[in-house]
Length: 268
Image (cartoon, rainbow, N blue to C red; front, top):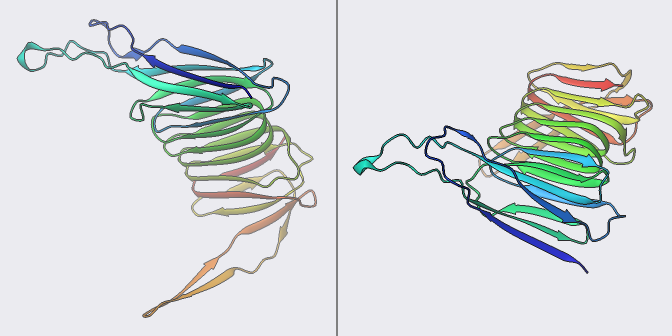
């Protein structure tokens, strides 16, 4: 069993006369234990962007950088100048084709550009100061963002994508026809493009936006779900109503949920 652990601590040179800028990217190349098998990558962080691109190689290439305001011309008390703090820590762990990337500097915004073998499943989360972008990947993809957009292009497989303040855009070249999917946003449009031969059952709800599709959907008549909750001093009744539509005869359930923004379900 092969296990590769790479820990890197970056302390870059300080220049007292430069303004805000991106640091030079630092690169880690990680070989896979089994180059001929599919791989998995997990990256959860608090701050920063994540970009993942599939390539024909059999290793994972991680490029990391930070943004830092290096304006040290502002004089502080007692004649002292601020020294830019461009230090951060991250680790990349590979074990049996599973790659886990993590940072020991949770308050530091780190931007990642990652290249993975095409057949790779992804689990990507970020919260602040960044977007999630994935291209040319075959596998199961789970993405979650809080304050940024999600863009997935030329995807083959299955996707669960959720963001709070940002749009969700997904373009499939091929899908896993047996796996349910979900796409949700609170403040941003949802725009998903599927192959024309898609067979699925769409479950849709939009609170303050419209729903559009160029698929011919067979809308299903459904009764709203009424739930009753009783306590010592109260009775609560709630109604949960969704729009259901069969695409090309129906199939696994694909959920689309939005609060503020339109939903677009497109065919190629």
